[in-house]
Image (cartoon, rainbow, N blue to C red):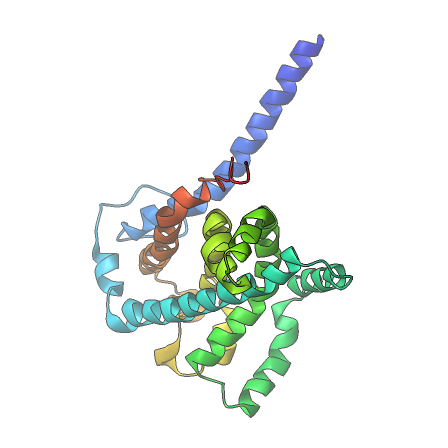
Length: 277
């Protein structure tokens, strides 16, 4: 067999493998969309037995959908904003100042990202009881931000390294402080990086079931990631159509967030020529 034929065979095998992986990821999404419109949905991926919006009518109520989604937006939105702000402030000195402690600190951050959340929830729960933060949205926001902060700092620092320091030095010459140069020069230029960190943090918090399930006790404060468990009834009885409809609504904020910042994600840093002259 010639080398050209072998390369073609490998390429075909790689394409078939990627197609199989894509189908494996697409199959659950197809089930969610089809089942949300099926009045007799089950676990099979099949054409709906007649299209209906009844599943959406059943779930679009304050108790089932609107209140949990609002709680999710408050929790994840507040925690994401806090995480991005703290990550930017922590990454700036790591990126701009050289110290023998930088590398150990970054390695410690990297180690912190590998800690399983279940391993620290028991002491965190006990701590929250002692400081009266249990069953509070603000306490859950603080823990969400703390859990996502290590990896956010790591990402932010790598993006910040791509912004030339000469631009800040010019601003310092004009009398700007370090905080002003960070807010007015560095962060605007690394907009795609900030967008990546924002999306990553928000998505990781949005799909988190365990943390709010442990730290929140009042049903009215539960986010959608926890309330979706209500569709799984006793003795294996599951309202598959309503579960699929809720999943579609639950996924919408994340999709909208990505669409809104997709242009910045693909825009690049646009620093060409910024330090010339």
